[in-house]
Amino acid sequence: QRRTLRALCDALVARLSDEEEQRIVQRHPDADEAHVRAFCRTSGSDLQLPEAVEEALATKTNADNQAEVSKLLDAMSSRAGMLAIFGTLTPFADLPLADRQRYFAGLQDSRFGLKRKIYLSLKNLIVPLAWTRDVRAVNPHNRGDDANSLWAAVGFEGPAPWSEVEAAAAAGGQAEHVYTMLNRT
Image 1: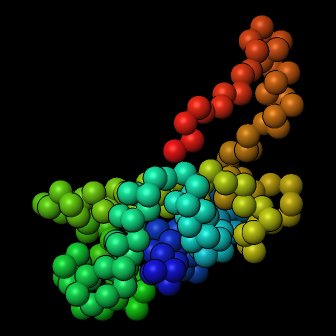
Image 2 (image 1 turned 90 degrees about the horizontal axis):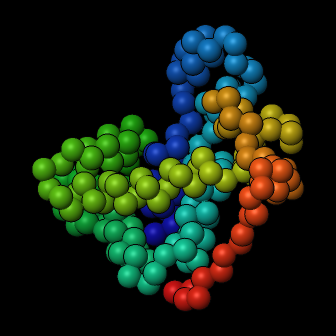
């Protein structure tokens, strides 16, 4: 399952080819080139995305969703499962990157609702974790500790420090509240 999850993360957040990288750098001459290149060279594995997905599943989803994703990864790891989902006998992790991306993208427009659900479930589980976490410390392509290269490449400075958020809320006459859940399940 972990091998399949890693292959899936690397298909959804893939390192771009040198040609693609060069085209993007040329299309964005005003952007910080080091951050744009770091963005282009980053894969899901570089962001420790498979580990983040595992953690999110373990801590933020219920047992039914965990079991569903586990069964899906099992199916994508087997020849029979891949035949049923994608129409190929090769386990997902053994496919070349371009094939993984093509097969996965094909689920999006499938006439079968279950296949579209697989696409949305996995995409919505994996992609937000790539963009919402501050990965300065884990991304080997990050340029310096002062900025997250993924965010900087698209012009996002990152969230304001909590102390600034509290001060702005207090200045506006709004108290920030931290809510706790009564039922943690």
